[in-house]
Length: 153
Image 1 (cartoon, rainbow, N blue to C red):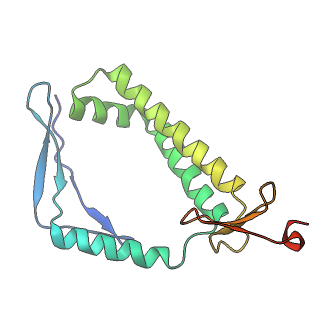
Image 2: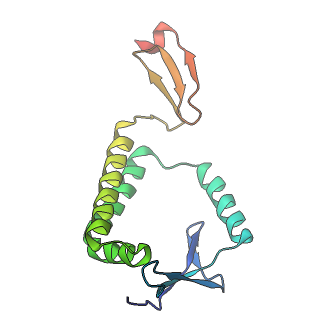
Image 3: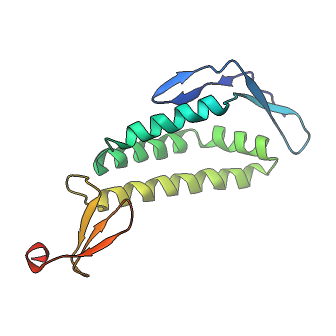
């Protein structure tokens, strides 16, 4: 199996950085090194959690989330063979099966983009009105509250 010398950086808070440590990714098929990636420790995990919490304070509107997901689906489509080869090497599975995983990832991103567009959140406060049930729903926590007739109309 081919060995890649590329060391991937960690992406945290929208910035790429080197951790100074790497780990080898080995093939379960023959134990050969198929990649080398940046190793993240506890401090890196804390940074990632803090960055995620900060990002959630101003979530992207649904149409922008959909655009990001569409972009991911397109990149997966364009680089299908590369992703399939990487999956096959690191998981020790047939290339055909790995290709089906990439295809499934494209479908998942595409479906998620469609759902983001379908989810009309208005100001993206996380609340939506379920007219059929006469309830106001908090999309983040799944809580439901009865609403009055004026809101349903």
